[in-house]
Image (tube, rainbow, N blue to C red; front, side, top):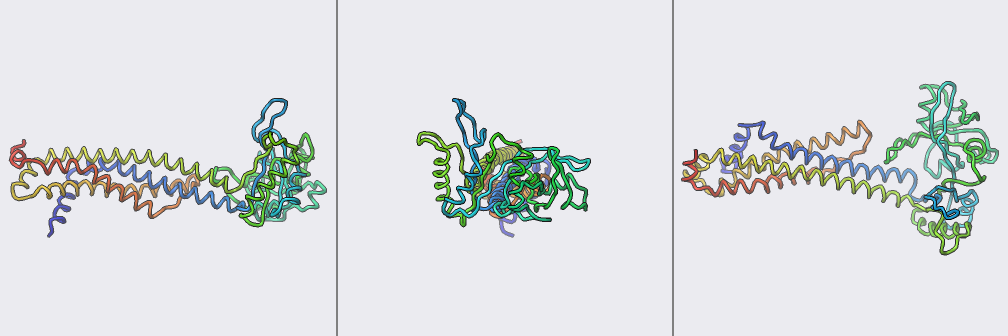
Length: 410
């Protein structure tokens, strides 16, 4: 049997002598590797979720919202005053090249009542193109039409969460009535479920009304025709930058803004939003991985300390091996192999722990997780490097012992 295999078997026998001490030594490695694997998995899952959410809204969509305003010397933040109108949206669709559709709307959180049940939710007044612009299919019934918008019809389309809280399972939803601010609405459709957004918001918790109905009978407004948001769709994503510039120029002209004045609106593209969220996720992931790396360093220091204790306990054994012909390289290799074995076992357990944590968070709180093979392999190899680095000093110390002094050691 080769020297390497003899040394390997010897290392396993030595570790079996005190399994509790070996287990506690590996604990830092297990925690560190587990945290790294879990954070990478969750970070990549969050990134994929952002991309999927942006795709569901459409990469060829940009958002226009009211911006900061200054009235009578008092400056208000974004959206403090509605500076956008229905005419703005209609002008964008008519005059900006590349724009295929515009959708506008306003929203408020209100109490929705059905018989003896009630639910506080978002009430959103918008236009009939909502399902197309938002890429949101209808699960039951139909969406309201242009005729409903023109006549301010008292019809409503519900999100899945609202249905679950106002209706019993199996109960007929389409054709029933709900009440918002003492106004009766006939439910004509139910939107397909989209679930939670990456920010944890329930996307299905809202009621959609024709904009004219919401404005005049539910939400109310100081000035008819003001809107809280405009969504603009272009034929392709490549037309977004040019459309954004044209929309900015058009709105500044419509709002009679002096060249020295700031925009009283804000234009955001879905890619900008995706980059912001992805950047935040990446920053959080790097921060958590830095904390996890500290655990790896602590685990490596623990391994070094235990090996130093082991060197002291086995001084006579080291001296005996040297006396019968063991070379310095043999002693060095023996302790390095012990360190690598401990970190390898700790690394494997850490990978399993990290994968388990990622799956647990996915099932319990809905955080997306993607197990990346490269990340798992990289984390495991890093644990071996930690073992090699921190095992080098005690191994080197053992290999430099004087055989005579080691045999005399009590």
